[in-house]
Image (cartoon, rainbow over all chains, first blue to last red; front, side, top):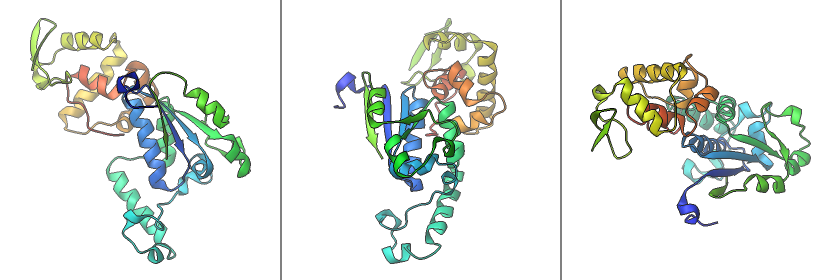
Length: 162
Length: 102
């Protein structure tokens, strides 16, 4: 799909979230919410570690990745020290609150109220032995990748992998 | 640039937002709403009043803040102003487009 299809006009954003580090989760959420704010449809497919962002017991405890993240400007061995992820996470949460950024659970509530569809990937759910009851209550369902592609139907749809 | 609407000439920016809030009146709001395919109901007016009072306080607007306003929840906000609610509601209210990403 090229950006000049439909004169580059975006009608729908299909976002695949495969990671659970908080910076990736926020990136996906801000992109989906920002789409809705512009009158663009948005759907998120949570797969692999991205499922943690909708897992009730995990979504309130997501962390910044301090290891393997060059933007942390921190030697890998320091990033791996005990407590370092908590420290970086609490620093980041303070900065985000200043920007009026909601916590993950409140952000999910905002996305749902804004009309974003939230889908859990069936294969990843099976792999992690997660049940739908364990997930954030307002997900739209557990679907296959094929189902997600069918959701993408229409002119001006763009797909994004986070 | 200038725009004539509801028998009045007002200054707007290239996106059609009023650049001088003192030029706004209810007839202009009605006409701007029609341009955006919206018919204003009393609920719309409550939201417009809230947006204008925040603007007068110089308080930044966001979707999250609208949701916590006590005036309207986010779901109804999207229902009242379907195609980009914050963008559309601020335009009708005669205030600048919020620069918020959330």
